[in-house]
Each structure stands twice: as structure tokens, then as C-alpha cells.
Image 1 (tube, rainbow, N blue to C red):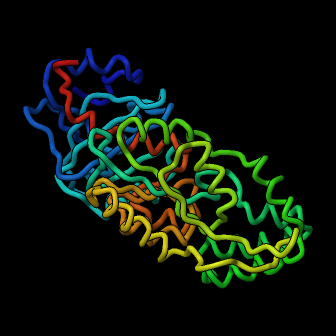
Image 2 (cartoon, helix red, strand yellow):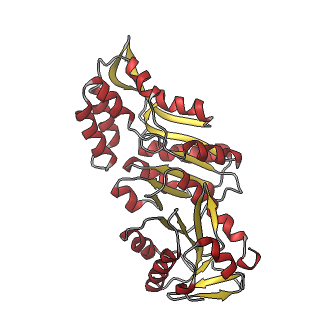
Image 3 (tube, helix red, strand yellow):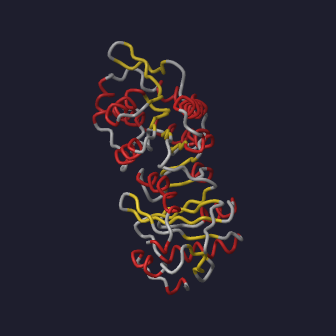
Amino acid sequence: MLLSQLSSSLPDWPKALCGAPCWQLTAQALLPAATAHDGAWLVLFGKALGTRHLSRLAALLECEGVEASLYPLGEQAGIPLLLLGTSRFSPELVQALKAQEWDIDVCHLPALPSLSEPGLLVMDMDSTAIRIECIDEIARLAGVGEQVAAVTAAAMQGKLEFADSLRSRVALLEGAPVTILDEVAANMPWMPGLQLMVDTLKRAGWKVAIASGGFTRFAGELQQALGLDAIFANALAVEGDCLSGKVSGPIVDATVKAEVLQRLAAEYGIASAQTVAVGDGANDLKMMAVAGLGIAIHAKPLVRAQAAATLNHHDLEGVLCLLSARSCREHRWNNC
């Protein structure tokens, strides 16, 4: 079937493609096939997903010399998704996809964790589980917002060593009343999709944890509200009713985050391939590198460039799209 003949409406696809179990994607058409590729994966998801995205992807696949098979449609959290199995994993295709602007999220991955098996997800907190950087909010209320925010931005972009940047930012908070922490905690906006993601993962038997360069005061709030299995974050030292301007104990930096993921996987008996790390900043890259799947969400350019998967158009519901995509391979078009 020529791609130009394929309906732009995804619900029409099963009827049009029910004549074969699998379909191989070429630059101009879908060709019937008895079996599907599964050497690596392509996942496309978004409310705007349609035939035009498949055609655009087909052209890139041809340029990179990668064959691909189209599995039946999937859906997660009301978001349509497509899974394609490829003949091999192509780093060049990853770069080609990231070099272009898409109005959906597109990820090419060598492997995909599955919700049908036990797993572990470790996420950053600030700008990942929640929509703010807590230290910036504390600093704003303490009257040193601009100074702290500038250091935070540089650290998240990888321009400053994280531990040093954290100490310098916390030092600016010396003398601020502890009650500021309560005010920030009471107005902490969750990242959209957080509750859905955690609830879905826990129903599937997954463990969910936070490893954050932020603070235990706020990670503890999330743990209590969401039933998280573990939290790792930094403790702000207090003198009397004020912040002392110091961090108490070892700092949770990029190396510690990676160690946390590996230690929790061993503790819970989770296979490395079933581990997922989610974050937005440079100090999340080591954690992403040791996970079975590293996912960057609304991330800085440095992180988007290096992460295996990137969520540019979705919030945490996008994580579920990626983790549910493998279920599509269990179905065939002639059984839809």
C-alpha cells in the first residue's frame, strides 16, 4: 500500500492493513511481510501523530539504510503511539532524528524496557518530578533569587561542577528562616503525569525512587504523597530557626545518582535492562548512562544531545508511552 493512500486518520489503519500480519516500511509504501524486524526500536507518539510522520520517517530510514516494520497501533494515557522494529540500531539515525524539528516525540532505541516485567525507575526531582527548582524558589523568598538562579542554570547546563555550585548557592541562603521551606513545599507544582506514571508503574510491580541534587524536605513530601520506594537528596543544615547556609552530609551529585540506581537495582533484584532513569540536567547524565533506558524530559541541549530518549512534547505521561510501546509487538495487523 502506497503511503499516499494511507488514511491520515489512525483509526482507519487497522481496516486498511488487515490483509497481512506485518508491514515493511519503505520510502513510498508499506509492503506486506510475514515477520517483523526486532533488532532495535522506533517509537513515535503524540496527539498529532499521523501518516505524514510515517512518510517523513521512511525517508530518513532509507537514507541511513535501515529497514523497519510497522506494528499495530498502541495508545497510552490517551496518546496514540507507533512502534516500529528495525533491522539494526543506527546511531546515525538517532542524530538525524534529533537534528530535525518534530511536533511529536520520536525515539530510536537499541532496547526497550517492558511494563510486563518488574522494573525500576529512578527520577530526578527538580524540573522532572516537579516543575520548579526548589533552591531557586527558596532563594526568591529569601531575596537572593537572581544570584542563585544564575548559578542553577549554569550547573544544569554542565558549565559548573555540581557539588561546588550547590555549596555556593546554599551559602547564599544563610540566615533565611526555615519557614520558607514550608512555603515552598506547600506550593510545589508536580510535573503533569507524575501521579499517573507512579501509579501505573507500581501497579505493574515496578519500584520508583527519587535521586535528586535537591533537598530531602521536598523529596520527602513526594515520597509520602506518592508512596515512593526510596528517596536520595541533600539535607539543608539548620541553626535555630534559620538555614545555616550549609549542606549537611554527603552531596548527592551525578556520581551518587548513578550509584543509587545501580544499588537499588541490585537490592530489588531488577535486571539492568529493566531500569529507567529520568532527568533534565547535566547531573543526570551519569544516571541515564548506567540505566537500561535514559530519558531526558524538557531537558537542556547538552542533555537532549546525549540522552537515549528525549521527551520534548510530553510530560511524564511520555515515559509511559515509551514503556508500554513493547506491548505492540505482541499483536499483528491481521488480528486487529
